[in-house]
Length: 308
Image 1 (cartoon, rainbow, N blue to C red):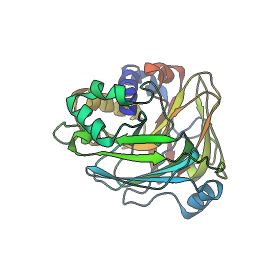
Image 2: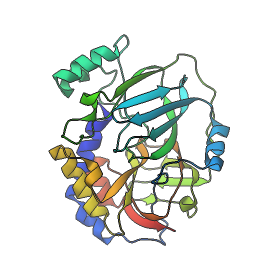
Image 3: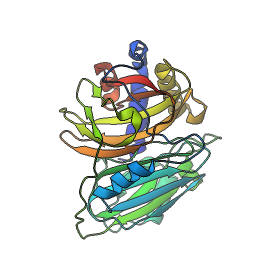
Image 4: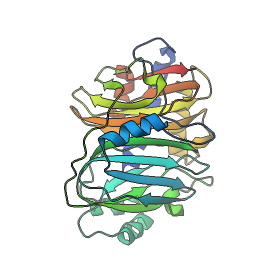
């Protein structure tokens, strides 16, 4: 299904148990989290981080988010694709990716979505698929996630609510790209260390706060994600959860919540890895897995910490 629908349910369900996050502490834990954000004034991954990422894979896809459109470039091949999501808009945006059935066009998807989200489901190759892609980003933020994509035609959508409550996709924020048939020989990038997702927690390496390229590996038996937020102040991850969930439910802008959606990695399958390139600015951050209709939060896959 469209990633936004899974994410919306997960954020909302996680908010129901967000009081469990109140006991999460800041720095010092090996489960402390950080954000994959660029400077509030713009920018993105450091030159060293970008070089490390490119050293492993030249199979790239670039998605620039504007208000309200995408600028998509690259000629990715099947295999490990380095997907860079760059939000140059003044609002938060998402890179919701779904694979289309053979022969389905972007115009057909637009026409179906005009009738409602359910009308578009039969046009997807696998409505239940959860692809490993970059997660939502606030304005002037940038991230790169290297993960596997199969050959085929894909649609990119943003369903976050706009200033008047209208989903961004209905304001023209929809795009497409094709992964060619020829298999890529792209290899995993050089990494600083590993972010480990388990069924009971998220463990960050001590050097995560320094930024760079990190393997995000799911060693658990369930699907997990690694979602990040830059918080207005320490200890506010529960408040941020409640606000984001309310925004999805009420059609309000997530940009008004006490923090900023700061990227991460969507839907890492058990035994699989993705590769996240991050730049960390000073501030307070939260991290969480939104999978499992809130079960991941209850199991302890959440936390906060500070940089600088």
